[in-house]
Structures are given as structure tokens and as C-alpha cells.
Length: 426
Image (cartoon, rainbow, N blue to C red; front, side, top):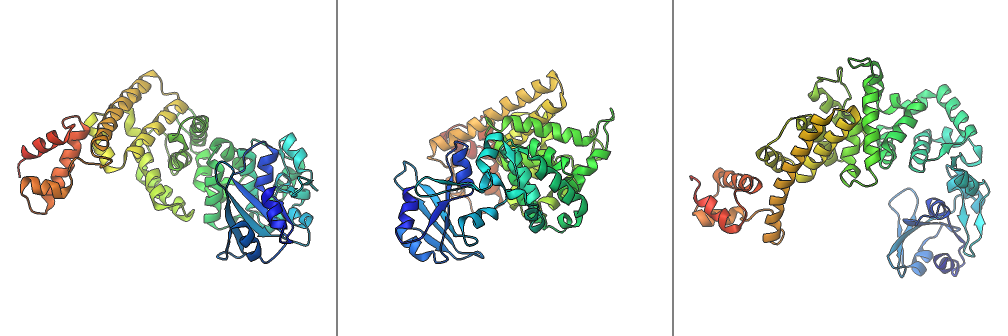
């Protein structure tokens, strides 16, 4: 309220809007304060709020940070769309976001958004299907909200949207892949299973992931579609998102969605073909390259963890990828085992593998403790000085060998590292 009053001191009307108000009405702490401002000139507002005006996009945006609240809270302000706050709210996608709060604490709610929040229903603002016609991607956004907020789609919105999809499938086919990717990644962040099931119920899968739709026609030896195996894994992943930090990894969730694309059999499939399809989809979705690498690494490695692994094997893959990547792949293997009900013997193997991995990671962690955060006891330059060597391939080979010796427990101090190096042939 103080932020709104500060803005209004320069003669500009201001309201809290959008996600900010929706979160307040749901009893949550807003992550960002979003303001609608009755002005096209944001410079004076920036002056009194200490913010700055970002001119990079199609519209200017006021951005700043509100101090003195215990923790800093970011805010952003945009010019009012239309001639009034009611006009602005009418342009918002859903009634639960078409609510505004004035500086005196009064609420502007022309479309019954607060009642919809209480009833846990998601409704197009003003029951206006033109919002979908203007931008069909709002269908995916609607399902993302329904999944994230665990709301039901209002019956009229549901029937209107389905009718639009039946009549205008070409509108969804023409949407850019990166827009689909953005909504899919956001939609799966908290409730991946629920989001994908909602997308399936509205017939959206062929538009952004046709190879997943194809898995409905590929059966296992019992006649169960491979699509059901994917959704079973996503359901297990979703159950772990609240408490398991590894499961919150974006690559982990995407691997659950994509691990069987292109498969023709559950028992044996062309993993390389799957990896190519995964990389193709994620590239077109504009996913960062490091995330693509992490997803393909999970899909490539997780089936191997159903066999016993030695500490040496874990040490090797940790050095090739990263500790987090290997932990995530092993966690993914456990999710698949639970989804497929592999049985006690597989779980025992996974438990043993997890124990071996923890020992390797614990040993690498001791290096950081003894070296003030360094990843190795000795640098390449220090190895050359210790052994009176010149730069070359052998220095790298010795460093890699030393890493293996640390990970397998043969070296646990600087002195032992130096002794190990002196014992190696040059």
C-alpha cells in the first residue's frame, strides 16, 4: 500500500494487479509486486520509487526493489491497458488474475475472480473466448494454471475451448515451437503428471510432442501402451517434487517426459534414436544446451544403474559428467523402478549403487574441505613443479589418475597425493 501511495503522490493512479493480487487472495506471499499505472510516462514514477525504466521490449516497464520489508521485494509497473482499470482487467486471461487492489485497500473485481479462487475454478475473463482466438497459446497457459493451482476448468470455459480446438486445429499447429517449450517447461515445474494429463485430455500432445502421442499405439508385452509407462513415471516424479531437491531439477522432469520418445519396445529400444529426438525437441523448444546435455545423459545412463556398479565405475562417470548429473540419473532410475514396480531385487541393487556413489562423492568433498574449495589437491602447474615435468598430455593423464585415486579412497590428503604422483611412471 505504501508503494501505491508513493506513486500516487506524483498524480499517477496505481493498482496492484495480476499474479500479485491472485497470490494475496490465496494467502501466499507475492514474489513480485505488479502494478498497473495510469500513465504512459514512467520516468517520474521511476524517480519517486527508485526504480528504472526498461525500454528493451515492445512496451516500457518500470522495475525496482522495495526495501524495508525484512527481505527485498521486486516490483514492476506497466502502463494501464485501456482507458480504465476495468478495461485493463478485461484484457487479462483469467478471472483469478483480473483483480486489482487500490491504494486504500479497496478491491476491483468486475469478473468475480475472488469467488472463482474460493471455488477453485479457472475461468476465462468475462467468459470471453476471443481471448483464446487472439492467442491460442492461452490454452496451454490455462492448463498450466489448472495444474499448478490444482483448479478445475470452469464448465463454460471448458466447452468453449474444446469447441475452438475442434474447429481451428491449424491455429495451434502454427504456433512457434519455442512458445510451446516455454509453456511445457513451466507447466511441468510443479505438477508434471497433472499438466501432461490435462494436455492429453484437451488433445494438445500432437501439437507439441507428437512422438509422445505415438506411444499410445506402441504396446508392451502385456498390451499396455508405452504412453502409460511415461505417465506412471511422471506421477512418481510429481510425488517427489515437494521434498526431493534432485527431483526439482528441470532436466530430471524433462527426462520423465521424453525418456521413451521414439521407442518401439519397452524392453529394448534404440537409445540413440531417442537421444536424437530428445535433442531435436529441446533445441526447437529453445531449451539451454546444458539442460539438453543433462536430459540426454539421464536417458542414456539410468538403465545401467539396474546392474551393480563399482566405486571405480561411479568415479569415472562423476568425472565425465558431474556429481549432480550422476545423482539425478540414479534418482531417475529409482523413479522408473517404482513406476514399473520392478521389485525388491532391483531396489536392493539401486540402494547398493546409491551407497557406492555417496562414498565417492564424500571423498571428493574432502578435497574441497582441505583445499579451501579447490576441486583437486594439486593443480597441473604444481604437478609439473613436483615432478620436474614439462607441459604435455602426460600431465593431464596424471591429474585424471589422481582424481580416480581420490574418488576410490586411495588418496585422501595432500601428502598422499604427492606420494601417489611420485610413484607413477613418467
